[in-house]
Image (cartoon, rainbow over all chains, first blue to last red; front, side, top):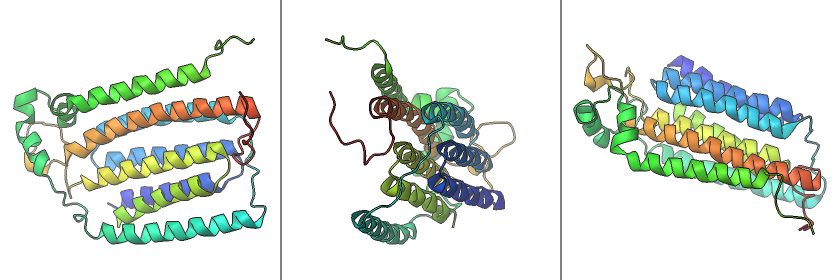
Length: 174
Length: 111
């Protein structure tokens, strides 16, 4: 499992660089590093379907973000006292959030020993009931097909929204 | 321990959203959080020494990793790209209107 640990650390480093670099283009590329590390981690965690989807989506996200970025720089800095106070408040909030979440982590099942009450049924009956050898596909398209329908609806609505926002011929100017 | 690392990635995304002033940096923070949550869900379904849940000859069913989180994460990844496209479209419109990505300068109303 050491590969997954290394990839998780690469994800942390990549996201830190993405947060702190001044150039937006390099921030986008660090973000792509995080996504591709996640893709390889999916492969090591035995989730090939997610890895395939992730790499396609990652490339698309890279193209979309580069289109938006151009050669802009992030020149915003902390200026006055009010903003320093805001920084402190955010820091305290994140520390409190982390504290409670880390306590919650101890109640989770141990890594490598998942609770598989529902999935047992899917694994046992997946092949004979749906005819799909890949159990992820059988869950996605048969046992939970309504979720996929909802996904398609959300996808359609979001792309429709993006087209409406971006189109050039809108209202006529008076 | 891996849960902990994925949680750290989530916190970095939260920090990015909360403190940066550049609109695109905020979008990147949201994307980082999405990655962290997907990673966490796949980690939850992993079984020690498991194999991918694809039925083949000679592989025992008892060794499959959990297929349910994988299916849900697949849905989540696809939805995240659609929402990212929508967010970036709004950002591009804001840039055309105000000629800046700085959220502290996008104050005046225009219509």
